[in-house]
Amino acid sequence: MADIPPKPWPTGEAEQVEPLVKRVLAPNPSPYTYTGTQTYVVGRSGGPDCAVIDPGPDEPDHLNAILDAVGDRTVLAIMCTHTHRDHSPAAAPLAQMSGAPVVGCAPLVIKSDLPRSDEAFDTTYAPDRVLEDGEQMRGTGWTLTAVATPGHTSNHLCFALEESGALFTGDHVMGWSTSVVIPPDGDMGDYLASLEKLMAREDTVYHSAHGAAITKPKQLVRGMIGHRRQRENQILRLLGEAARTVSDFIPEMYKGLDERLIPAAEMSVTAHLIDLEKRGLAALEGEVWKVN
Ligand SMILES: [Zn+2]
Image (cartoon, rainbow, N blue to C red):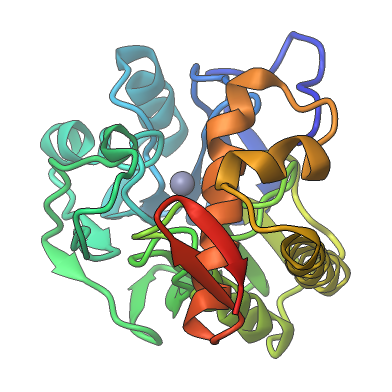
C-alpha cells in the first residue's frame, strides 16, 4: 500500500483529465480509499450530455461538486463500476437530482454465509439497467462500453471510452495500490482472469477510482499479475514449511503493515488460499491451512 500524499488534494474541484473527461475527488480519504473516491464526468465540455461514473459516497458537498462539473449538460447515465460503499451510494440521490437512470453493474448477489465485511457493500444500490459485458451507453461524441472484470467484487465492470481509448477501471486496477480481494464475493481466480483480460486489450490510459491516471497500463497490469503470482508462491512456500492459520501468514508476508490494514491483508491471503484450495493445492482443517 502506498503512503497518502501530503494535502492539499483537489477535493471538490473538477479537473479536466482529458478532453472528454472531468474528475472530481470525493471527501472520503482513508487507508482503503487513498485520497478519496474519484468520480468521472464523461462528455464534451459545453456539449448537450454526459455520463457520471462512480458517483461515490452520498455526501452533499461531493454531489454539488459533481453537479458543478456536469454544468448545463443532461446526465444520460449514472454508471457504477461496483457497489462498495465508497462508489455507489451517491447514485440514488444523484438520480433524483438529475433525473438520470442508474446504469451499470448488477446489484450484488451474496454467494455464501462465510464471514465477510458486509459493511463494505452498498445494499441500497438499485440500478435501472444492468450492463452486460460489451454493452454500450452512448451520448453526443462519447461511447462507453462495459468490460466485465469480476474479482475485486463479483459484479465489477470497467468502462471503455471508445473515442479516446481510455478505460475507467474502478477498483480493478488502481493508480495507488493493488486491489483488495475479499472472499467470498471477491475471487482471486476471477481477479487474475480479469487482469489477463485487460492484457489482451489496447487501452491507452486507465482512470481508476483511486490514485493518478495510469499511462502505461499493460506494464502495470503485468506487474500486478506478477505480484499476485509471487504472493501465491510465497503462500505455497510458507505452507510447505508448516501448516498455519491465516493470521500466521501476515507478519511473514506484509512487513511493517499499517495495523488498520491487517484485516484486508488477512482477507487477501484467504482469497489466495481459497483459490489454491479450488485448484487442489491447499486444504483447510478447522482454522489451519496445509498443503494438499
Ligand atoms: Zn471497491
